[in-house]
Length: 507
Image (cartoon, rainbow, N blue to C red; front, side, top):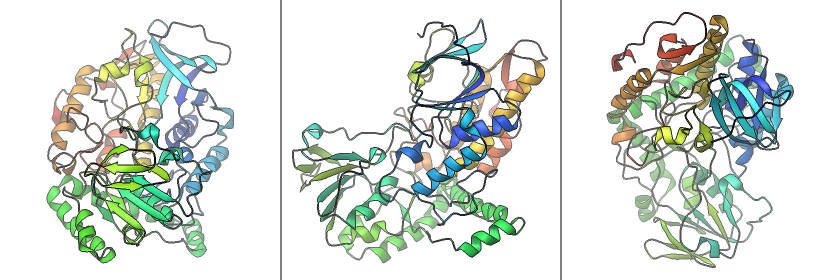
């Protein structure tokens, strides 16, 4: 339990936003535009950027088109590729923060160690590396792709060469002419393997589960096209809408497993055209429905695996020795460098174990291994707390930015209601949260996320889906476009809104 502390001058603010990635930057901009000027963004790193600051491995890029993977209120007029790479996305975030004058509210190098709700003052008390802060509203913008998942196998500490996690890349390690073992076959592996293959003497890829991979139409964006998008009224909006429609089409297949089979036909054709060796092709063919795990896109991954110095080991890693990696099937590969493309602990919110309610219960204890929230944004028992990109909001095809902007609309509406009514605190009603989550889980039961026959980070150890959104993104945007006071209990003056219907049909 974090003890009560007096706030230092200048650290008693209206809103504290934790994290300065896409979510935190977007929240600060939207809150200031809505008239909330007393906002502070705390970022533990020396600079902003979130996952696009931390992931700098070779080939790192977005798998959502650049026009859609950017703020609608701050479009970039000079993307150089259809799918932007990490340096360009990071630069976009920096220039956007500068454009909207966030330098005065952004405090980098400040780590939030914990926070507790003070019911007497109706404020959050934060303990940070910069001393105590106090806030009426706490916004967690730490994102789901934040805590790297290490390779946990016997002997990993005995490996003689460099061990590089894709989210903690060491650019001082030269891979040229070296033997490299890569563990993992997810989104980062699909991007990094072709880059490693172009310079390493030998690449050994250990694949526990074969992913579904569609071709990625990543092409340079002609300057003339950017010129037209910038000057023709409505052109950029139309392009964004078209890309959104394509993403939603894929999402429809995930919600209806029979449609996913049609997309699988295209994925199988892509594999057959790229990989001629039958045994390799068999090892690269997934044994679960498309969409059960995150769908990947690449037009270079299969081609890289077909190169003579690249070898596929379709097995999990059992152990690591001083100079070799040993698979669960007994095969061993000598290596000078070990690359772990093992992803993130998606279900673990960084502050969940040090965020306390008024009774001293942590958010992790409240969730008991199954994160859930009302509209992915608020958690009952934790007043004036908002999560960005929280539980059950994303999916295999959705642009996180589309979801984020819908949540920011909801956040500003909630805070505007607080300001207008004079209330000091709002807390999600337990019945509202339970009803909403029951509807979500019922809808997820028939989706490919739950029925596709795989194990994925969408599912908690209990089997409950804590990640995916079961309906269209359009439906999510509509739900978040209106703030319903009846879903909350209130503290302070003002008239309480109508009760929220306690039925799943409400959603």
